[in-house]
Length: 256
Image (cartoon, rainbow, N blue to C red; front, side):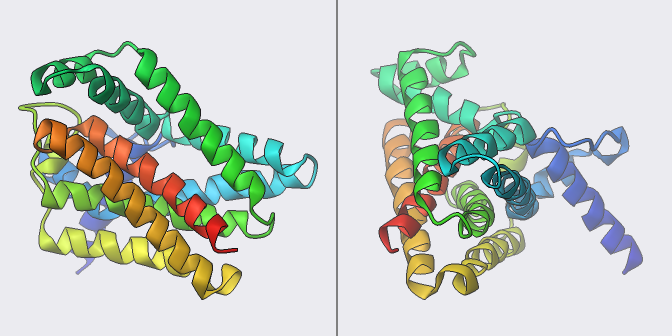
């Protein structure tokens, strides 16, 4: 039992190392098998990111107007993750917007340069998040951040488990090969637990709104890239996480 707990702890720390810039520096954590098992802890890492952004929002809201607090909170999230998911979203916008064929879309998404579609999509996404958070009641925002960051990463794991990876290599390949039913169950349970944190703070209807908005964001983004690519890439995982996250914010806002 102790050895199993130690192994799960190592997998969790590797997930933190993979998804964030938080100081987890040990090189002994890595192995292909551990990396393949990390998706089950992605929503738990989302709880950490949500906690950091929520704390920054609370601190900033005591000094600044809600819009500026939302901006600083969003900036803290970008710094914590190293823009990991936002980069994928921007690349997906470039590829899906500018590629006339599947092959061309994949080629554009592989290019590290930011194009017009990516810049426009990323600007709108970040602006939409900040405006949505600023429009929420100040005391509710930290709980919404916790819920959205956890559940949106569960949304990405669901894509890994139920779609096909479309590259022979890339950032998504190692984890794409390791999604088991147990890993998916842990990820979804953590995402649902994150959403459940909203119930005491916001009530049942806004929580259901968050779930509905997240599901809509997931389905809209997923239908877009699966129709064009026949599956997903690592960039698509970032895109579906971002769409699910903002969908969660908007769902809560629509039900208040």
